[in-house]
Picture 1: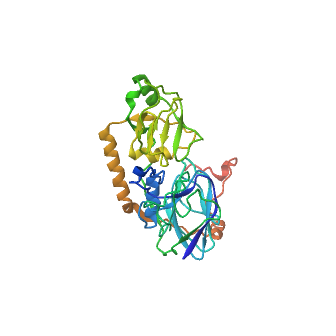
Picture 2: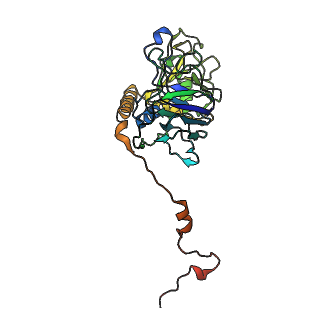
Picture 3: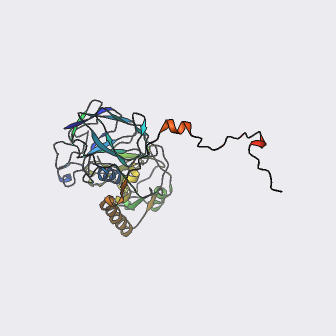
Length: 345
C-alpha cells in the first residue's frame, strides 16, 4: 500500500465525489464535486468510476507527495501551473509520482476548482453511500472537514499503465442558462428583466453552500417569505435584501425565500468555476432546451473514455539544444549586410 501525503493545501479543499443523492428526505444535502465534468474527466484518466472520490482543490495552491511507493494521479478542472521537481505537468493528463516526488499545483487561473484523482480511488467509510465532505455537518470520509497539511491517503500502488490525456470540448463562454422559477411569479416583469439583463459578480464571501451574487437589488412583489420548499443545485433564491444567492452543493435541502430561477444542470459546473469578481450574465431558456442540454451533458460523461489519448511525452536533451544552432545564422538588425540578399542581375 502506498500513501499520498498532503504537503500543503489552501482553504476550500476537501474530498468530494458524485454526492449522496437520495438522502435529502433526511435533511442531508447531496454535497459532491462543484464541477462534475472535471471530476469525471480526472477519474477517467486513471480508470476510476467517473464519480469516484477525489481531492477537490480550491482556488489556492496545493502540493502532494508520494510515500512508500509510486502513486498515479490525474488533474483536471481550473487551469493552474503544475510541476514535479520543476518538470511541468499538463492539465487533463495522468502522471505517476515516484516514491518521494511531490506534485506542486499553483493558484487557479480562470476558474476556481481543480480535481486530483488517484488511481484506485480514495479509501474511506461511506456516509449514506458517499465520501463527499460537508464540513458544516461533519460528514464525509476519510476526513470530514477541509483538508490540512499532513493529511494522508492510503492508496493503491501505481499500476504502471501508460500516461493518458483527455480531449474535452472547448469550454462554453456564454451566459449561464437558467429556467425561470419555480417562484418567478413572486417578481414582476421589470425585476425578472433586470435579473436577466444585468451583469453579475460572485462575492468573495461565497462558499460551497451558496454563491452570493453582486449586482442590482431584485424586488419582490409580495415580500421575501414563502412556505419552505425543496431546493436543487443551482436554485437562485432572493432574500429580503434583494441580493440573489445561487445555491450550490452544500445547500440546505429546503428554503423559504422565493426562487426567481434555477441554473440548468449542464451549467451548474460552469457557474461553480466562475472566479469571484468575474462579470457574467444569465439567459433564460425553455424546459425543452434545458432537458436537451442535460441529456447532452450526460452523454458527454458516458463517452469520456472515448476521448482518451496517449499523453505527449517529449524528452529534451538540454545539452544538445545548447550546442545546436536552432535559430539558423545570426544577423544584426542594424547591419543590412548580414540579412539583405543582393538582387539577381
